[in-house]
Image (cartoon, rainbow, N blue to C red; front, side):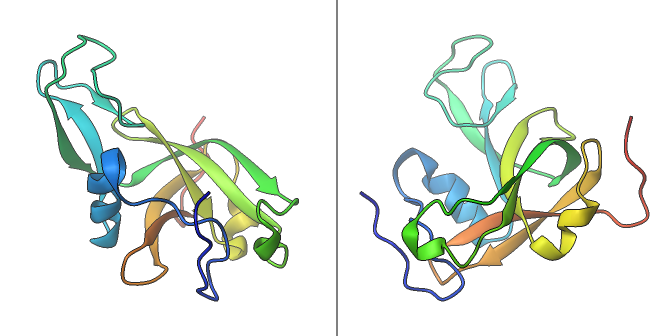
Length: 148
């Protein structure tokens, strides 16, 4: 069981920023998105895995990518995930297909929720929960239309 964060702005179970995800969370702390890239064939992937899904190489590195893409899917959560978060619902989660062709999951601040639709162009933002944890959020790119 993961410890809950006592930070007023984050009442959910705390992600573990160690182990195989350590480079990703370190990148988020620096307000960057890092994903695995295969040193053998160059394919990028998220969620991190020990071997490449294309060539099966175990030789990987972490590369920074731009946080711009389009909404592939989204949902609004109405039921609290954790008891301490019952005052935080509703909140919105998005799956964003980034320009590099990989999909990542993030949150959307509720003030942007009415603007989120499938195909909407979004960009990454970052929420610093505390000194050790930064989370990935997305916001609409203003002045853009839905990508068909």
